[in-house]
Amino acid sequence: MEDLAAIISAHPFFRTMQARHVATVAEGATLAEFEVNQVILREHDVACHCYLIQEGRVALETHVPGCGAMIVQTLGDGEALGWSWLFPPFLLHFQARALSRTRAIRLHGAHLLIACEQDHDFGYELMKRVSQLLISRMQATRRQLLEVHGQLEVDPPTAR
Image (cartoon, rainbow, N blue to C red; front, side, top):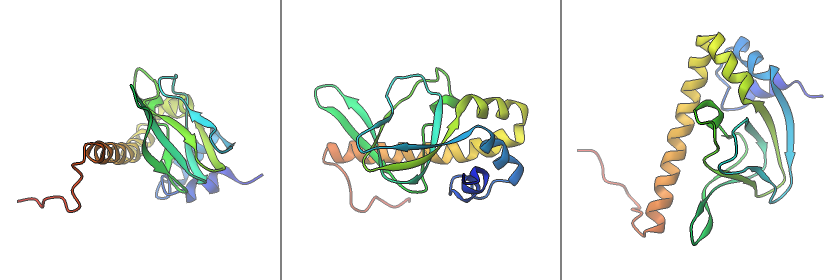
């Protein structure tokens, strides 16, 4: 079996994290594989896990009444998904569906949440990474909304 701590420490999401913190992450980690079109996370379900994508492509989708599922963002190798377990009410905000055969590392949210409470340095390091991820998701959603409404600018205005 592959050394999960080594794989996690090489993943872009955790690459600069201290070894002792990576070891904490690895304690609750397992390998996961998903087939094409398999739902990894279902919108509105209880959030229990997050994933570090090793290989594959995953669509983040949201249900739009009258339109069905809309892809908000496509994730691939080296990206992370599923951080709703960190924030009450602990419900998933997007559906994640494999677009290709996908290999990932599954991280148990409760384990990480407890570790954050017990070691605030670890919690701070994790929150910095999650904050960057959330900013990325918000920007992707913004681009999608602008595109749907035909207002996506090729060159955004510069700051004045």
